[in-house]
Image (cartoon, rainbow, N blue to C red):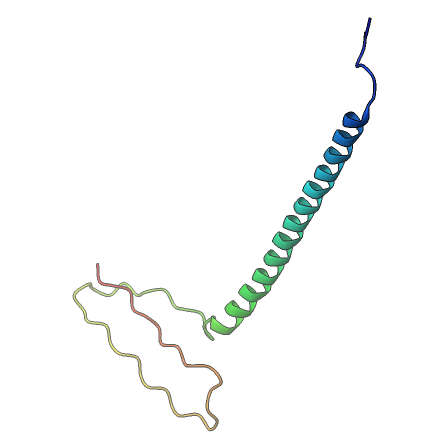
Length: 99
């Protein structure tokens, strides 16, 4: 009569083995992608911290004064030469465009 799932033969066993191998391969790929993503985020965060530390201004930037819009911005005074050369390029503040 043949009620149920039928007999367990070689094709069913082979299908179960193939399914198991494919599942393990998919799990390995998912773990590898998660590992690489976490590694990238950690490296990028460290690189961003180093970049901000090297490129942040030495003094806090003052807010723009309420000078009239027609006034021309003055050039910053040249810095006095230091006894030793600076390790980084000195930064000059950028003036905002006139509105």
